[in-house]
Length: 171
Image (cartoon, rainbow, N blue to C red; front, side, top):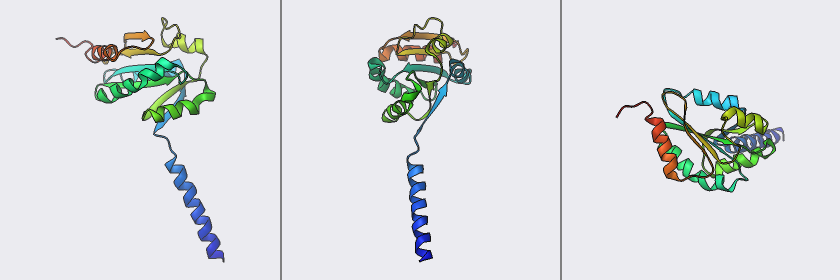
């Protein structure tokens, strides 16, 4: 009888551990401030260009351009880093995580944990707060080489990435 209970408990424990390990998300969605984002960007200075896309699940243009940005992140993975920053409220964190998983984003992504005005002002003085907002930093300098509000074409993204990757390279 004791052996039966032990086996039953072991089976339940194994099922629990298995379900926990299988439910682990491929996305690490971290809460951040503007300063945290700028620090993350600076970590790539001299190594890769950085494109940061600010989006939200409730923003239709953000959702429309998102798959294209994910594809570009794969295409430029050796030369650039793409960081996604959700502007959703923290109580919508699970929804943002589900969206990122559905878009097959892997690794580190962010969700703001700061008031809108502090966050917006801390990222770029000319950002009005409109979404989507994209900002691209040069590979060598780490400085802003391009930025824009609103949904843009793939061509605009590619041009900005190429400019950031080739920053300072003489032709």
